[in-house]
Image (cartoon, rainbow over all chains, first blue to last red; front, side, top):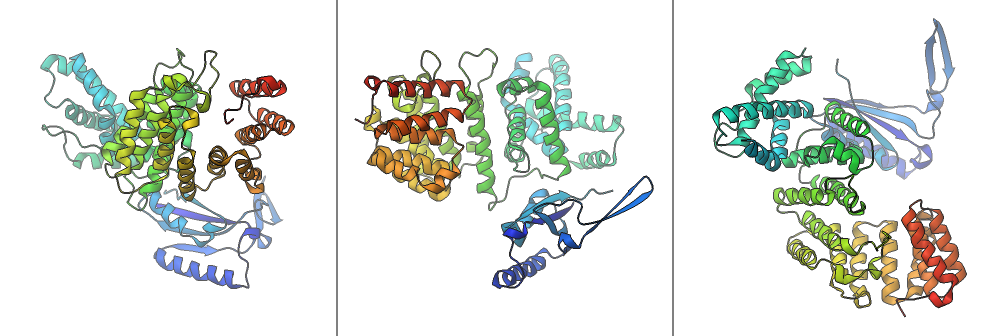
Length: 111
Length: 416
């Protein structure tokens, strides 16, 4: 069964680029990704780089910014294959950002 | 025949259900199939006599009934997959061997942290406790349909999120076992705090909790924490008769008539605690039970060995460094070393801000201030405590204290 690990962070509580904490975080992520083996995933740029698209009544609406302005924003994701929720939760506990933010674990709906 | 069925039902229902869920991989299907099998038993056993292995008979029959159900309903792909698995599933219960005991898998699944606490309690009582939905609803003062919805959502979560039907691995076990014990504690407390003689609830949740912890103890014989939990429950249960006064007001342990404590239950608690201590790992429940035991050993409150209790709280803090544990430790220090020592800890700014909305924090402060003769501050703290709780019994209790403070001749200080 596939699960998406959705990482949310509050930048105020999360290490920022330029500094030993950041370097450590990057190293932790590299180690984590290697441990995962088979996966897809990526970090995301911050919400100020986002654009939101909607189509309503045949009209295309394009707006600057993310879907929702929140203190904690989505900063990355992984999609992994697991035998059970427990395995996915275990992987989520090892996501380096789990120490600062949250990792949502949601099953991928298989068609 | 009905008696035989009744006996099997009472003794083996949860075990049968646990096995069926393992075979069928579906809570609802297992419950429905079991119901079908029981209906079949009332007919077949009357005609052909009670089988040698009644529980096994029910399991095998339920499995066949499940296949019937899957065949007759418009099967989704998932169900068809289940049907295929069933066809090759091993046959159990035709012989005389007892059916396997899957209750551990069931209890750990019901108490999975991915479910809300309410759902864990409801599911545990329904599947392992064998209580009806109506009984569980009444016990927790919610409507039958609301509880049924809770259970439906929980089963759906188990299915859709892929919560596996398994006993956690050794590295997962301590946390997961803690969750199981938290659920059992909740059930016990719900039963303990229920007003006695309430005809509404015809089921004793304390008994259910005791039964559940016994199952866990039997199935995890190397774990000391469930044994400690059982000890704690005995200590608490022993105080039941003394817990409330004639008007139904709660009486603090300090003020309880200890001659009304049940000696047999205390003895049984001490026996269990001794057993737990003899096992390898001591944990938070072991420490909490030990604290209860120190109280139980004191024939009068002023004979309580508060020094031991302080040391036990020191140890408990390493496991649970929480504000409430810190507060309870401060109370013990106040008893051992005097109210000013206790107040110094209670007035710690971090603790104060953590517990600013907790009525017992202010009540504790008030009590310490009262014992130090700082009446105005004590009155203010009691009022703050009263403001933070809606519980009528607690209001009356605090009002009693306030009234006593306003009239100095009524002031009794147990530590004098």
